[in-house]
Length: 194
Image 1 (cartoon, rainbow, N blue to C red):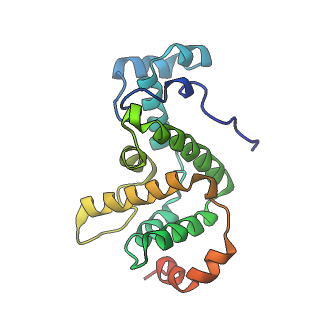
Image 2: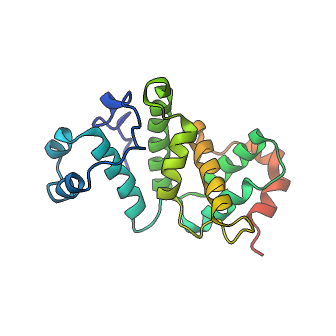
C-alpha cells in the first residue's frame, strides 16, 4: 500500500466548520452520493455529508480497522492503575499488533483528526469531541466485554482509547522498545485471556 496524501483533500478546506463530524449530513443527499459515487460528485457535496460518509465507511467495513481481537485489550488498558501517560504508551504498544493496512489507515485518519482538533477554537471539535464521535464507528458494541458499569463505561473506555490514538497519531504502530521494557509487566495482564 503506497503512502497516502497528507490530508483528505475534500475536507481539508473545511476544517473550520463548526461541528465537523459531529453534525450529521442529510440522509437523502448521502444516499444520492452513494449511488453517484465519484470524485466530482464528492467535490460538490457539503462537508457535513462527506464527513458522515467517512464515518459510515468506517462503520460498514467488513473487517474493522481495529480488529475485534485487539479491541478488548485496548479498552482494558484504560482500567489499568497506571498514570495517563503509561496507559497511552500501553495503547500505542498494542497498536504494533494491528495489521499493516489498518496501521496505515488509522495513522492517516488520526493525523487528519489532529488537524481537525487543532482548529477546535473555530469548529468546537477538540480531540475529546472527535473521540466521542469516532469511537462507535471503530469499535463493536461488545468489544470491551461485559463490564459492571455496562454500556456507558464501555463507551467511556472506547472514547479514551480513540482520544489517545488521535493525540499520538504519528506513533500508531511504531514500536518504542524503551516503553516496552518499562511496561512489560503491565502488558501481560492486558493481553492475557481469562
